[in-house]
Image (cartoon, rainbow, N blue to C red; front, side):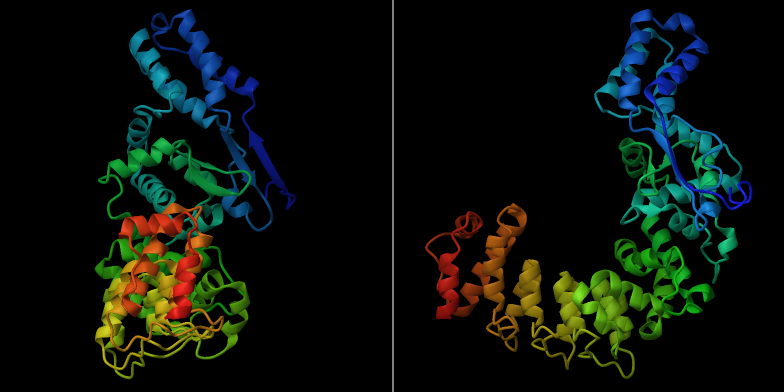
Length: 469
């Protein structure tokens, strides 16, 4: 596009107007191959319902100098994607009754009928390269932890599993992806993110696991190959490339859901040199509080063990913790140990591994003078709180920089989170657990009654108990 327009590409958006959709539907109905199976009443219902249902259908493009390579081709052939899928589903019916039922299911929000399945058959009928590209793209859009920008997705698809590196020139254009996916994906014009055209497409893909086999393993391996690539290794702050932020933030999330041998190997390669890797900075910039980001420049930064504990991957922690010279209580740039990260994130498996290993101080705090028990109480991780309270060497009364004990945080946060029942109830149960551990002074009510009492705002009593303990 940039070449065609002489570098004058700008941000544009194309939306399907109601008149445009009506004209499109009229043309599709005119070309109906079995017109005797279309009544005037049904045709009127189609012309009234489909434009309303498809009102959000559009193909959008945000074309600028930096993104034109990835967005080229979007404006060539505007499509009315949902309208097209809906009318094609209806016209596949061989009777008026069948067609009317299909329209009703679409109007009722049941979905696209058999459109996803039929479209996937079209995808599989393409040549092998296009089929593979489409299926991997669908896996990313369906299973990514957040919506992907168009250039992020294209860079991810430049990675080939089994290859030690990737070539940015292998990144397909977003126009190519739209063509290969046969209308099942679209580009959001406002956010420039790639999405499935309808929520029922995701439901279809997720309920047919054979279509996308071990998707989280594929996504984890892709992220790790990307991070281990020479292109990423050569980066120096503040440089970045499109897929760096996502891969740094979420490789461990995908790996924790499906662990493959390849991913384990790639992960250990990354973590063994993680402290000086640009992805460590990228991860911290995304997960730390804004006030803590300035501490990233301090040393030590963030080791591979810190990262494995953050993601809660027991297998990686077990391997790294037994390496020669491992310091299990090493603090990172914000003073957090492996145990603090695992406890704060609620990774009970990693917490167990760390506590069972000698030399771990379960009371070692971070820069906020907050120990693992305090963080697990604040975040509402009941299992981790219980596990820590069972340890004789854990101090349950240790106040942090705000002079609040773990019980104080649990009680205060129960009131704060009272509008979110699940969170308020969990914190109330944690407060009760701590009170029982501290002194055996239990209220004259059972666990369910106590959690309901706390959730409904009756928190003055626990605050008094804090002062007594």
